[in-house]
Length: 416
Image 1 (spheres, rainbow, N blue to C red):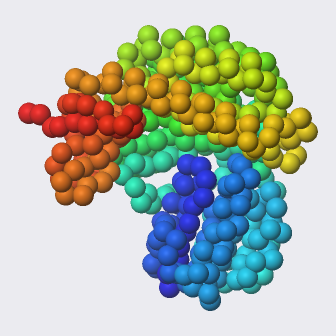
Image 2 (cartoon, helix red, strand yellow):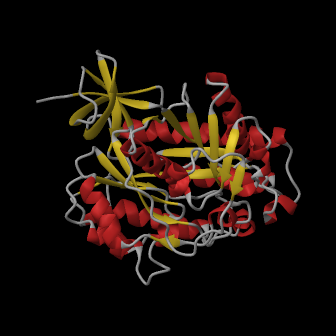
């Protein structure tokens, strides 16, 4: 029997999917993470935006295109938000939510049931994952207490809860031979707050791990001298800091219920760059938040340019029913997408400057793919690098940067 465990959404979802893949493989199933012919499909869904939820629904039909007789199990945030949107679909035999994903291997042959369990109050361990990629994601935290005015995730994932340091360290030791470890969580910065610990304490406990360690998305308030000092103590820290900005306007940040100002954000960026000279600062920006004026958006554009982000994830605001922002005056879709285009131009300009700044330097690259003539992978700063030659996937090589290609990636060569 073949099972496809198909992930939609964030790196936390990816970790949970990888955990299911390992357990199902140990039980003797042929398992893939691709959407292809299979006897069973497990869809781990996303609901961070309307578009993500739509793609989650569409995935059911895509499964049936491969196998009209397949059994389909749905779990994750989209089914937590609304289980009925999946129960009515053909061949969907079981629907659950966010909690209890580890039980899925035991209910493959259950018919026509729905069990969206109460969200846990303590961290819910999964099976040890089987990564299908060159980097290993290690989930250390779940849930969120922030309640940003545009976001459904605290309602779908529950309150913040942390995995034990001992459990995290044990898994990091187990996967240390992989190319890279990425610590991830729904709100990684909140790690430890529910168990009288902190992300800084967790990082200190990983000082003996002999592997590249990268952090997932951070809230800017976690950054201080003690935190950065702990990162300095890691053997191989990847100096990329993904700091969620969302807006460069203080008045919009307040309406978003974000707990910092642009001045505070910029001070943390300065502190990072003072500690890690080659750090790449990346971010997320929402364009067209409800009531956002032209002046406020211009403030956001100017701030993004001032920081000089190495890369940006730029999104149009997506209204989510049940959030405070959904009750505010909405901008038109046309205006939102025009603002995305304007922010994308700033993103391209900033990214181009950052890439050019790396020319003439050496970077350490984790190779992820090769076509025989060229290989590509990511530097410690998470810049995409194209290298001449056929290099084995998973190998880490030192590369001299000779140029930048289309404001998208670096070009380099291996020098003795």
